[in-house]
Image (cartoon, rainbow, N blue to C red; front, side, top):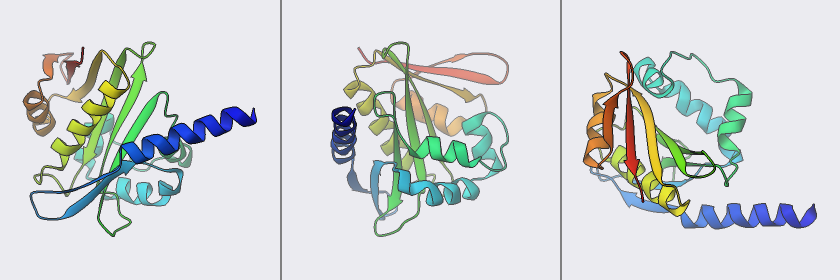
Amino acid sequence: MPGQHVDEKSIADSKRKRYTTERTLRNGISVVFRPIECSDQAIFKEFFKSLSSVSVHYRFLEIIKELPNETVERYCDLDYNHEMAIVALPKDESKIVAVTRLMVYRKGRKGEFALVADAWQGFGLGAELLGDIIKIAKDYGLEELGSVVSNDNVRIIGLAKKFGLKVKSSDGDTLEMALKLM
């Protein structure tokens, strides 16, 4: 329906505006945080190629050499009712240096997040993105936010604990992290 398309575009425009910010990291570099866009497919592919095999394993819990085009397209074309992805780009550059993604599950009550960064670790970027995704999850009205991570991903586990996420063993290789939002 023509009216429905306008509503989806209006929602997308509103969320893009609401979730676009610029902040300065500990290394003094200004970074723009904004929702990912369809036009980001090429730079998202480059970002993925720049990740170490360790970072890929931490994000996907397996080694993936290359993302299929269909996956890249799906990651960059958001359904704002069920997901959000925030990318971090150094100001005045067309280069993604980190991304966080929120997926809404269970009739909108529970969300899962993922966080990926590599060369930019240690500058506060992960904390900025995790703070953003928690705020967005609250905006979506979620009751809980969680993630499953590799048990050797000490950086994200430490960061999650700083933000109040509870961490518990899932199986021998993974941990479940959860934060009650309500």
